[in-house]
Length: 465
Image (cartoon, rainbow, N blue to C red; front, top):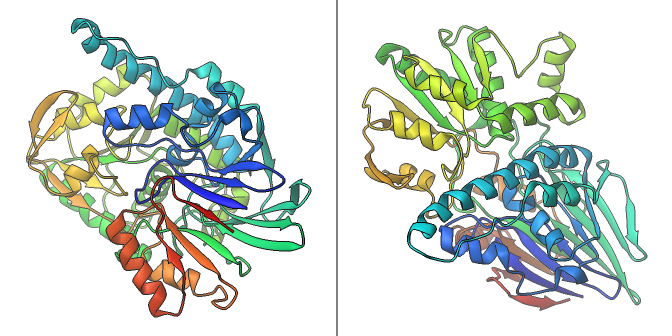
């Protein structure tokens, strides 16, 4: 058996790990790489380490685009096997992949306008909506805790990762000859006490663990304090008549913040102000959330029992049309505008930043992880002048960073989770989905609590088991 680490290796995006056994070739995740446009185009278009037609199946941890977003490209290049996921991940992927296809087309259209003027060769989109629809036909939904033998000798079971709706920790029992290998892949590991979703579930001890390390060296604010911190920002906006611009991922983060705002206003922690969710994808994703109450924690389930909608309340408006989105430019503060993408790399959030980032009365509230070289990371890092849609803008608005809403486990939470696994049984831990500085710190933490043989694979690294 061999594992090759192709994506999210010493970086956070483009999750993809290739496993070859005597029974099958398969992938854990098939995500889009996000970063510098030129690099992303090349990495996402090319499958340099394997032939997609040779892949027998894909196991998908969750629906975020950096984990699922390159499935249509895989299909387009010859893959026609099955894609195994939870039912909620399958349903979210329906809206996520079609939206991604639309973004691919629009991004290439924008780039090609400039290339055409310069007489350069025009690009083609990674994939189009028809590729996304055909890839969606390959999905097979499974329940959490359901043992499923994909092929003789490879048994799959999902555990709840508590990261986004439907997210899963993948466990595999692989039999080769007389040998039994227990392998787990964390996907993205969530945090205890986050709103809406259940906490991450513990898995049985394994021989090999592919573990995310996004915040391997950092601590978050307590998730239980997130509502109080958000209420303080709202009160400040009311005093200054500010617009609060929130770049938020359409799946997961948007629903969590909407739910938190619901509770803040209901409990009188802050005065009600208008809230606009400007993202067609978020609207569609929220509909999927409503279909999967089995993923909710006890508090959210209690909301539902009272016939309350945790994703809708008085003075909340979901925006879908471009015309409605443009009209938000003329809306006066105080108000909240949430839009995607969370890393500020595409979508309507760019237009809201253009129209609001130079006003010192306004607030840009960053509530999630942003990869290197993204506009979101530049805002988090405090850059005072940024490029948006080809033009330079001064960052006069106040940028506030709140990590308490992060859906990724922090350093202590990662250690607490991993420490429940049997150190004597564990042969290797592979750290993925993290920047190298965070991974080195996390590796040291793991060694301190007694784990050995911890590897930080670079892109293309292969290990035989």
